[in-house]
Length: 178
Image: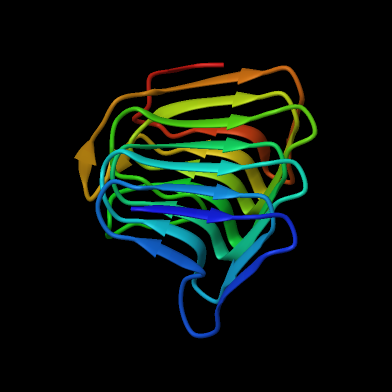
């Protein structure tokens, strides 16, 4: 499926997700997407979220993905729990995805915030040119998902990564590159 929210548009999930896409799908956002659970929830592999300049995605989790996916952000993604989390379906945080090669690209001018800015449970790539902040960690790559060891992570930073605990945190079972 495909969802496009234009500038000035608002999509609200009053008792759940703002946008929920089952299976592979794409979401383009120029307006406001908000949910009480997730702003955007993708539950299949091949998910893609593009948050353009002026766009805002917000919820308990800004974006959750439960399959291999990509998030590209030029706007604002906010989550009270996490901005973006990538984990298996039983471990969902921020932008969440259970695949090995999840990608989060935060472009110049983009902001991702939450208790965790970006958190991944199955490894992945975070490429930051903007601002990623977390009350705990800016970026946390845990390296596991549902009890199984997964691939490591890569963090490339040309912007700002900040957290009260750590700017970047790689779990004990992660081989990674910063």
